[in-house]
Length: 336
Image (cartoon, rainbow, N blue to C red; front, side, top):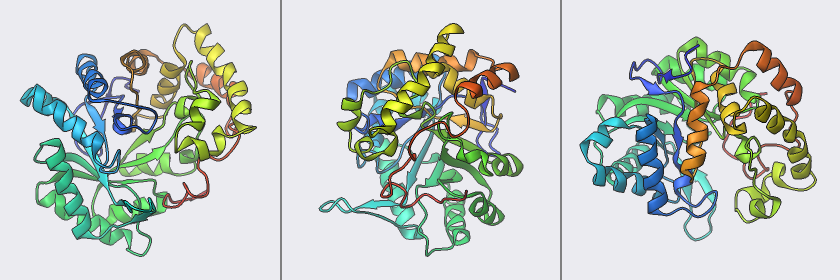
């Protein structure tokens, strides 16, 4: 097991085993400004964290704009250093806020072109379909993405929140470099087939929310803070009485991390790295201090004994409440 290095799909580019989820560069988990985004990306270079994951809908382009602004100020060396992934496929009505999904080839390419302009780059290393449009066969979508590879606009294709069966279908048409899914000690559903299928096909499993939206850190969001965020105020795990139960149960994990002289976030990410060389966590943060904790996961070796001890504290299914509300479940594919 290599705690330091990862690859995306069949690309042999050496990536740090911990990436950066750039949703935090918008205001999704609280206010973020250009200076904060710049400080995170500067620290990432110093730490050798070279994979950035963003999307056209993170802040409706704000995340990509901040990445592009940083790259423009830093120049070619920064552009060459970072391995960049972005996504398209989610549409949001500017008046009503209602979400829909569009996987048509023309839409995906048009949105990709806008992303490239916002970031000031000629191609991205990885381009995901952010959510499936159910009435377009995934084989057709994989073919559309494959043509973007042939055009030189993207290097590899990916899908977010799809089932193992969908991955197999897409992979038969064009090699799928990565599948992105929520995966952590608090969300173990990918172990019901996705972790295994990705390993079999040579697809990287990119794990978002690897610290359980702060539940697996030393400083979990307070109930009041969670209720001040649009996404979490309706999320079952952050509603009473689930929130209080989750804080109480996860205290055992925080105590275990302290006993091992590591930060809880570091240990949570290290546990993910121990699930396979094909698992690449992409935690997000607005704090350089927290980024240092996340990066420190690369130096922690989680032994089989530690795995057993951790899972005795946080057994599969420990979390109270679903990871999404009914509205938030519209789009992701359920498979178990």
